[in-house]
Length: 118
Image 1 (cartoon, one colour):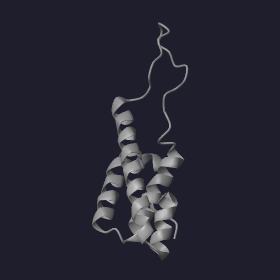
Image 2: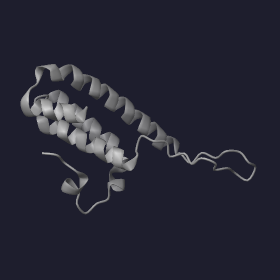
Image 3: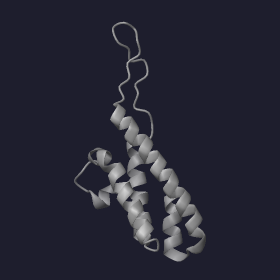
């Protein structure tokens, strides 16, 4: 089974989920450490990553050419938002590395779920 945000959050826009991405992924990863043989956990992680891709979450939100009145380039990125995106990148990278090392032991649906995440 493949989750989309329309399946789990049919009446909500993915933008509302954006501020919860780090927390949700953190909880998913903590749960996967506790229950590494549950394929649904990896499917939820894939679900979150698909929302990130849909939102262009990992791309810079800095607008090119935005300047102040003095001609000095203005950054439209909120520092907290940037730090959160960086934290999510680090979290996903570490989790992907864990999944890659663990997947050698997996088969069937669990292996498919891990490969979909990767």
